Image (cartoon, rainbow, N blue to C red):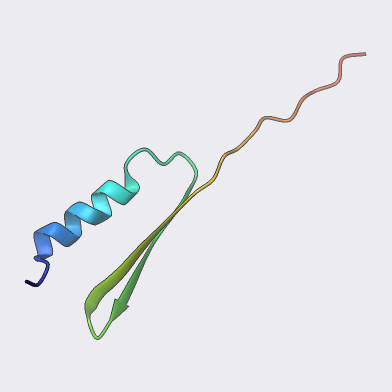
Length: 51
């Protein structure tokens, strides 16, 4: 059974949820979403040296 437009939009929404830093990549072929990739990055604050 084909995935509906609403299910695809829900999958994109889920991929975006909770990301502070990163990217969501949507691959489209012939006008159809075929893949969603989520890359989440962790950022760490630089330690400052005290003198």
